[in-house]
Image (tube, rainbow over all chains, first blue to last red; front, side, top):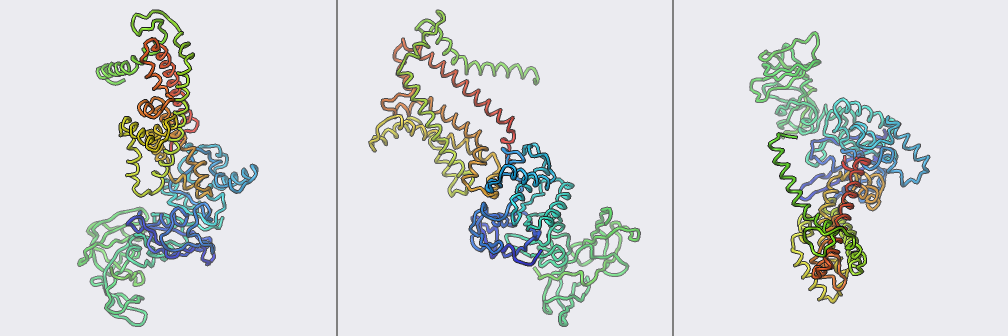
Length: 354
Length: 270
């Protein structure tokens, strides 16, 4: 993966009637990157993908791919191919003809065509199923055919619209690994739309988190998780505790943050003294120890390798979520137990106040 | 077989209903083979002379030819127009689409006699001579709503991302139509052709107003009813049409079910 800006989406806005589906999206996707658009349904991620594919055209803004302006180009001349959410396997054609569909314009000889399609079938591990009809395929097989049909054209970029959503959990996990491996071996850019944050985290090089048509943050999975830029991102990715606090003092780059009943911590934060802030803390960054903030367990769930607790701390309205790895050394806790919570200051994520 | 007391009553009802539908129609073939000119029991003997008379009747054969030409042209025209409208209404964000759909189906609700008179007045006003062409225009007007209804339900029946997939795979709008939309809509197109043909073939009022000197079959039959001795050959004609329609319906159904077996997939989008 190189740093060159392969796909540039510049200030793209798209409205449908009164709804702003995509609001000033500005994004650069690198060559060979596995890039995900992540967000809840209705956040504009699919519209943005359809704009990249050429099924929708932006009201304003520009799209460039590999230096070529694509903004007004229709889908059939763009260097990308798409895997549809419904797979869109042509029901009147068999698997072979589905995969060969997009090769017609290359005017291959019948034997070359056969070689290309057979290679594609081998790539998706469906050798010998060329004569099958769409309704004779399982969901996973349809998904693979859709993938082969798009990739057989050797696109510069593959667009995937929630392609794993219709599969059962086990198959989805297998396909996640296969898609990732395929992307690495082909080296082409994947733009992947999903509402499943775990899926996005496990597969992507970088993720754009979207909400209400806006791109909230673009970062690697680890950065999104460890250093979300705002409350919405922090809330959407994984579990998160939120506390309100304020900067009580600052000394150069470091600041002292006052969390009221939870104490004061020295953190690195840009806000000036006196500013109100929102502080986020992951449940698994909290330790149950002998000293620290005192509280009582209000709910407990044993999940095998880990346990989840809700701990009610006096003077806080919301209970604090805590996730603990279970081991021979950690005792389990029951509802009503008095526990002490501790965390290190660098586990705190300082966000602008709501 | 459900509970007996229910089944018995419903079966009797169904039989009565079928008898009500088809017994009157069966009188046509029955009396078409009857020797007597008079349509009355008892039957007086078997004959095929009315069929011979029918086939020897040039005016009738001409009317039949006219009806076939009008029916086929109307079916093609209205199905083509209906396909374009159905595609626009189901695939594009047409401003005022619902109102447009309402307007296109209006001819279904205007009495044919009103349409017939107003078309006659219009054609007179612009001095277009009456001919089979004017009948075709009138029939197309009333058939397009049928075509739109049949084709819209067909086009809505398959996933529109199939057409997008085709565009994505390098085809233009036009080639996508031929490679994806048309084959998938084909059962609907055939239904639409048959339906609009039948509607045109037995339409009387509009044809009566607009035909001028070229009678279609219903007009010819109507004119023959004045002559009692011609009645048996009209019955023979009716019986022949009956058989032809039955063959057509069975054929269409056979095509459809074959389509469902061999290409089961055509049924479902995704």
